[in-house]
Image (tube, rainbow, N blue to C red):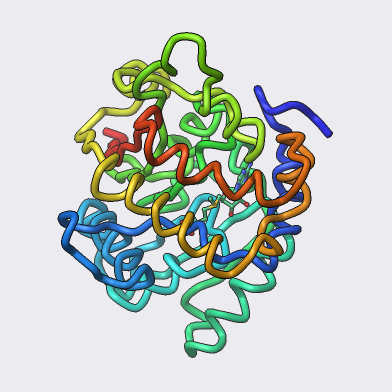
Length: 275
Ligand SMILES: C[S@@+](CC[C@H](N)C(=O)[O-])C[C@H]1O[C@@H](n2cnc3c(N)ncnc32)[C@H](O)[C@@H]1O
């Protein structure tokens, strides 16, 4: 299996094809520690935060980069009336997302295709807005941002969520971030201050960076840790167990709670504009 400093799209696609038992890794938004909103509703809230920043109206053409199993795209279309095209590098996700849209009667308005976000098969300026939820983590960021900047129309917005390396591991302890990027086939993480340079290199204006570590990431990791423990280790995909060299799937179960407690990992929402 390819090592993950720059995972190949084919390897990432194969990994997601293998996740058919696992729906748990979807991020949510919780306002404060006492907020007990269920995960599906909290996930919709995060999508809504993105909708507010995209400023889309009915009939707009939206691109969802790394669309997963289609839940955010369906919410986008339902709430805004926009037409959404989702792309993913996993053929199985295209299938599941297409079934989801059809089951909601949105088969015309929301469509899905297998495509590589770093080499998109769309002409320049094809979309009014672009969003990417937790997907740029698997990509060469400069290349993915250049592609998003190319396919959005002038004046269009790009809204994404990304993870960053927040604080170093305590002296003498192994980096959980390194462990995580290996296990989940992620590109090397960036630092908290890197988006101004990344935006400029892609010819984009940075409109907003909002920290989502507390209200999104750490809380999601806690939920994921609980769900994995409550359901059982059969939910942990075999590829993950292999890549972290765990003796047992149960060792892989500890990663979300270790990450939550260490606070080494951060998450940002980033709003960009093509002027
Ligand atoms: C963590 S999932 C997020 C899914 C979805 N955005 C959500 O929030 O539920 C990452 C997604 O990025 C997609 N992805 C990763 N690398 C990709 C690439 N090079 N081109 C297209 N999609 C990619 C994966 O197929 C997967 O759908």
